[in-house]
Image (cartoon, one colour):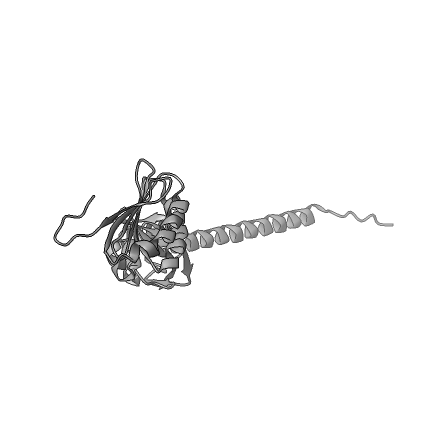
Length: 255
């Protein structure tokens, strides 16, 4: 019987070559993918690729224009690409506009920036130079811009905005009983209240019991008005009754 000898070395070498060949191929594939990924990232970060070129402004704008929004965005810096533009920076810039109460900013593929703006709703003029919205927030809108609205003018120390606005609403209801409208309501540093009506009557209420004193004025108004004279002021800073001043032609107004 002849003994056969099997030499396994060549086959082991063949398997080893196949193993390393497959591993090398895998490495080449991974490197190719990484290279492609880096190229994509570089392309996405290139400001010349997918530049944001359109700004679409949405929202009910009464006191602003889309141009105001575009100018606020352009003042930051030129818009970057769709992928790298930071919308928070734009959002912060738009919120600095005087009439903007709230805003949202988002990007829309491939080249558009969409801005939705909510304006303040002015309810009164504050200290002659600013405005108050319906939530008693002071904002820097120009009183001249809302002149046609004939808003009430409010005055008060810093931090009293909400209090003065709430008192205005209360007193408007009381004076409406005699068809009187408030033109000006003031709270001075001594916490004393004064009203000026649209027909020129100055009402001094003082620091205490302002609503009760105003109701006293309402109760006395018919009697005072029946005298047929033009009322200049009514001073209610007394426990009972009131002091009344009359307008005199060509005479200086009493302060």
